[in-house]
Length: 87
Image 1 (tube, rainbow, N blue to C red):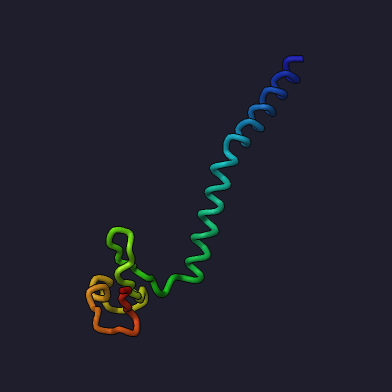
Image 2: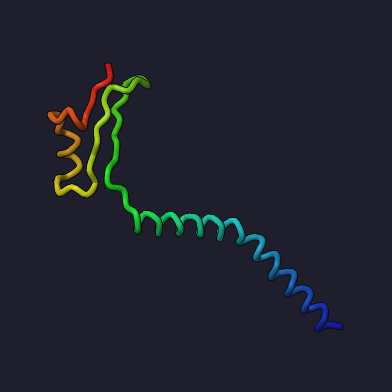
């Protein structure tokens, strides 16, 4: 009788533990899948938008696989093919 009660309590606590861990395991698996995806297919470009009072002023393309530092790419505004101004 005591062994049967102990088995029931252990089984119930195991199921309750799994139910409590489900949201964590779901988030962890989603984050892991995203991590693997971006390791296989990394970002190569990034668009940086400059806004003033919610109005888009300028949009700049930054190449993440470039040898130039990101700050230098953001400061260069001479190339109008990659940067454009909104009027």
